[in-house]
Amino acid sequence: MLELKNISKTYVNSKRKVEAIKNVNLTFEEKGFILISGESGSGKSTLLGLIAGIIDPSVGEIKYKSKVLQTKKDILDYRVHNIGFIFQEYNLIEDLSIKDNFLLVKSIKNLDKDESDVTSILNKVNLQDVENSLPSELSGGQRQRVAIARALFSDSNIILADEPTGALDEKNAKEILNILKDISKNKLVIVVSHNLSLAEPYADRVIKLSHGEVVKDDTCTQSTYVNNDIEVAESKLRGLDLKYALKIGLKYFRFKTFKLYLSICILIISFVLLFIVTGVMFFNENEAYSAGIKNENIGYLVIDKYEYQNNTYTKEFFTSAEVSIIESGFNHIQPILFGDYLNTSIENSLNDKTFIAEGIAEISEEKAKAYGFNLIGEFPKENEVVITSEVANLLSISVDNFESTSIIIDYDYFKVSGIIEIQTSKDIKASSSDLLDMIIFTNEEYYKACEEESVVTEILVESSNFANINEISDALIKNDSNYVYKFDNIVFNSVLRMRIFVDSIIKIGTCICVIFIVFSLLLLMNFVYSSVLENKRDIKVIKMIGGKNMDIFKIFIIQPLFITLFSLIFAIAGYYIVNSLLNDFIKSEFSLFIPILSLTAPKIIIIIFTILLIVSMTTLIPIMRIRKSK
Ligand code: ADP
Ligand code: MG
Image (cartoon, rainbow, N blue to C red; front, side, top):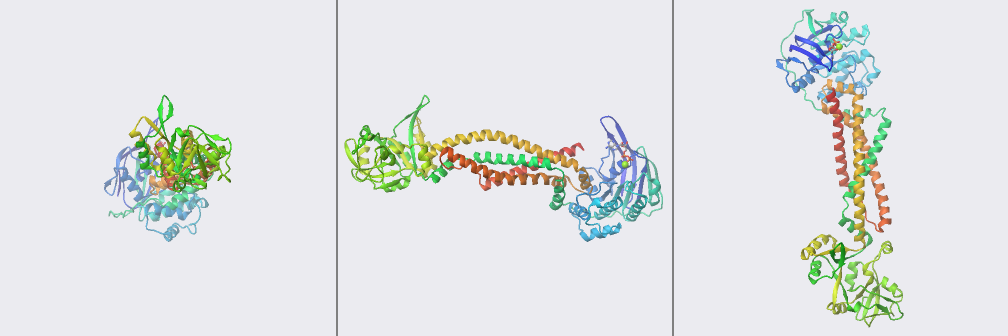
C-alpha cells in the first residue's frame, strides 16, 4: 500500500552535509505493527518524517496506493487524509481542553463526528472523564493515549509514532504499546523506538537502521496481509472554525501586558491622528461655507470685481453683461450703486454728525428677508431711507427713537424710516466690519432714478445660492479674463482663513500620522512575530492534524485584530473629544462655528475596514517569514 523507492535524505547545512537516509527501499501493507529501531542519530525520525510527508526526500519517490506523490498538493493531501502522527511530546494544544483538541481536528478536517465519539474513542484507550481536562492536568502516559485516540478519531489509515514511550515508565509504556498493537490489527502502525527490548514483543516487523541504511528487516510473526486497496473516502478540508481560532488566539494574550498596553496606546494615538487627518482632508469649502451661513444665519453674499496687476488688486466696476451673468446664478441680486451724489458726506440734519456712504441699494421686504436683514421700523417710501445700525451709530441716531430724524444726501432731505441690523451673530460683529454697514437703503423709485448716473461697485446676492459660485466665477472669467471676482461675506472670509489652517494641519498631521502608523504596524508585526515564535508547538500540532496555512493565519490574526478593534473604539471616542476641542478653538479663533472635521459614519466605517485590511496583511508578513525560515 505504501512504498518508499530509493529514498535518500541529505540535510545540507552551511557547514556540513548529513546523509540521514541513504537509498532506502521499503514496502508497507495496510495493517500491522512495524517497529523502526536503531541507535540515536541513525535516521529513524527522518525516516518517519519522510513516511509522514513532512520531510521532502532529496532523492527517490513515495508511492501510496500505486500513486506517486509528486506535487506539494499530493503530499499534503496524503498527509492530511492518511497520517496520524504521535510525537513523544507536544501533541496537544495546551490551551484547549481534551475535548476541544478533538473537536479542533473535527473542525479542520470536517469530520462527521460528535462529542460522544470523543468519549467512546477516549474509552478505547482507557481514558475516562478527561474530556474537560486541560492537557497539563494529565500525566505523560495519559497524554500519549490522548494523542493516539486523536489519531484514531481523525480516521487516519497510518499511525506514526516517534518514541511514543520515550518519556514513560515501563508500565505506562507497555500500555501504550498494547493500544498501538490493538490498532495495528486494522491500520498500519509504524513506531520508532530505540528501546528494542521493550517494543519488539509487539512488533510484526522490525526494521533496523544504522547510519541511514536499513541493516535489518525482519518479519517477526507471520501476519496475514489482506491486499485489497480500500478507497478511503476523502474528507473535505473545511478550514478552522472561527470558534477555535478565537479560543486559541485569545489565549495567546497571556504574559504580554507591557507590550500589549504600549501597542494599544500607540495604536490609539495613530488612529486618532488618522481620523483627524482624513477628517480635515474632507474639509470642503462649500460645505463649510454652507454650515457657516446656516449656523450664523447670514443670508447675503457680496461679489467684488478686481483687476489684478503687479501683485495688487484694484477695484473695478461691473458691466451690465456681468450683472446679467450673476443674475443667472443667484437669487435676489442687488447691484450696489455709486455716483457723484455720494461724493459729499451724508449728515444728520439735527446735529453735525456725518459719514461717507459707500453705495446705495434698494431694499424691499422680500429682499430683506432673503438677505437675513433685521429691520426695525418701516421699509422706505418716497423720500425715505433705511440705514444700518452702524450708520445710525455714526450719526448718533437712536434705534429707539429715529422716526423724527432726517439725513441729508446731496442736499436732499430723507426721513429715516427704519434701521437694519445686518448680522445676527454678535461674535462676528465684534470680530470684523462689513461692507454693507456703510450702505444707504432706498426704495425702488429712488434707486431706479440713480441708476443712470451710477456705476455698480458691488453686487449683493442671496447666500443660499453659493453652490453656484464656481459656475458663475467661470462664466465671469470666460466673459472677461482680465478681471478677478471675489465672493465675500464674513463667513466666506473665515472659511478662506480656515482653509489655510486646515492645510497646515494636513501637512503636519500627515507626517506625524504616517510615522505613528508605520510604528504601530511594526509593533503589531513584532507582536505577531513573537506570538508565532512562542507558539511554534501549536503550529506544529495544527499542521500535523491537517491544518493549512490559512488556519494558522486565522489563529494568529486574532490578537492583532482584537488589539486593533479595541484601540479603534478608544480612537473613535478620542476623535470626538478632539473634534469638540477643535470646534471650541475654531469658535474662539474664527468667531464662527464651522466644523472643520467632517467625518461621517460611512467614512469612519470605510477607514476602519481599510485599517483592518492593512492589519491583516501586516500579520501575514511575520507568519510568512517564520514559515520561510523553518
Ligand atoms: P534519530 O531519530 O535516529 O535519532 P534523526 O533522523 O533525528 O535520527 O537524525 C539523523 C541524522 O540527521 C543525525 O545525524 C542528525 O544530526 C541529522 N539531522 C536530523 N535532522 C536534521 C536537520 N533538520 N538538519 C540537519 N541535520 C539533521
Ligand atoms: Mg529521533
